[in-house]
Image (cartoon, rainbow, N blue to C red):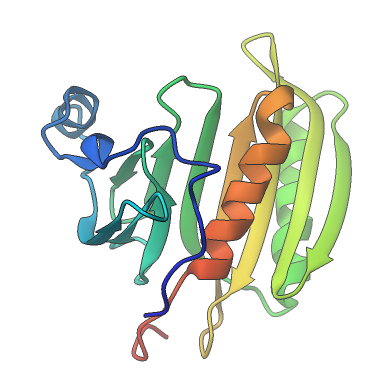
Length: 190
């Protein structure tokens, strides 16, 4: 595995305390059947990150220190302790029309779920994304960004769904992009 880039701008703590399975938040989520903290591969205090091996992704993923990370076998959740940001990582099959088909389906779902969402599509390198703005959850304005990274040798993508307050969205999207850019798939993950 290559050393990850610097995650310190996204780190919320100087250590890996929030990745301890017995941390009160993680224990609560585990006891409620939400999921478990993924296996830790390494911790890099100098770069402000930990490398995890979440079952849902069949990959090695670097995450910033200070975030809670829970995996239930279908998705891996990164939770900001302050509650302003959530990053939901999942591995999904791509339809015959590929990444475009995945983005079209996400957009159709958002159109059906919200009264007047605004959309934006962008692509940078191997990552394609759809932004959904002008939506709310419980009356509170939120934004969602769906970043897709193709899984090499598989008809699948890793989807990072970022849900954030509008003020935190740029930073949250930068974090999701960094996570996807650093993800490493074992040779037999297809």
